[in-house]
Length: 373
Ligand code: GMT
Image 1 (cartoon, rainbow, N blue to C red):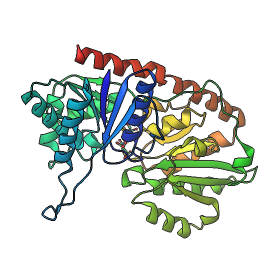
Image 2 (cartoon, protein in one colour):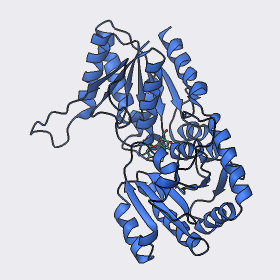
Image 3 (spheres, rainbow, N blue to C red):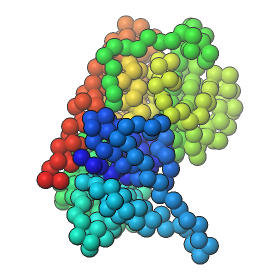
């Protein structure tokens, strides 16, 4: 099949999922055309069957805000028409689904039929999408997409709660290239960040408010009262300054490392003992799945789709949002009981297999085939 994938090229989970999906489909012989405004971070260098079409934003002085959606829709029309695409798959509803709808109508007026799939990722529904300034357009696009998928049961439920739609939404969970065995922890790499007797906790995100990064630090502060440990923060975003300030206030700077944005999170995860994810809302928690896939148990909140990924008492622990005391106790419960910790590591690896690429990829392929007919 010739598939157009529209995505955000940044570090966000939806862009990562879309890029990895395209790469996996290309490896299976499909022709993939990524359409977005800059090279997706996870795309890497040249790959067979993969093409990238940049949506170039022109800077006309009349526009205080550049009409990205219009330029994107025009680009979609062009790519579908001249690359002879069979289907479009847009990740994150805003503004990709409405641009796809517009492109579809333009192409129909020229006698070209193209179905489009919209995958809902989370904040396009739970935070931004339900806002009255977006809601009518998102409702319309959900109803007009040829198929709609959501990355978790929880997100599907939220979509029905927040939008006036009864259309079918298929849950296709996010996926991971799962490993057979626990990776060996590289002592040499680890020693650059921690002493041998210290534990390493990590958090990876875009540091938006919804991630509650300050909770991560408060959990860590309680943990280091009891055991020697280091905290690695990977990623960057609007809350980083506040977080660094809190770090100084809590006198934790010697124990906390900010590595910034990393395109391959495995490097950080493989050095870590536990992953901390105390988010306010999370439709799935791709970062948690990435941790489980390298045998790193997860201490998280119990919000949204996280319980569909992290199993309480098996691959980590779940607590109410904001309950930093419970979360720090859970960290200590695992790190102070070596047998339990090792069992949780094995469970984590096993759990990640439920979301393996081999299981999830055919769900998308079958959906495309159904729509193309
Ligand atoms: O977490 C973010 O703010 C980024 C956002 C995105 O769309 O890039 O992530 C959402 O999609 C991910 C991939 O499906 C999910 O794993 C995240 O849980 C979801 N984020 C939220 O719901 C807050």
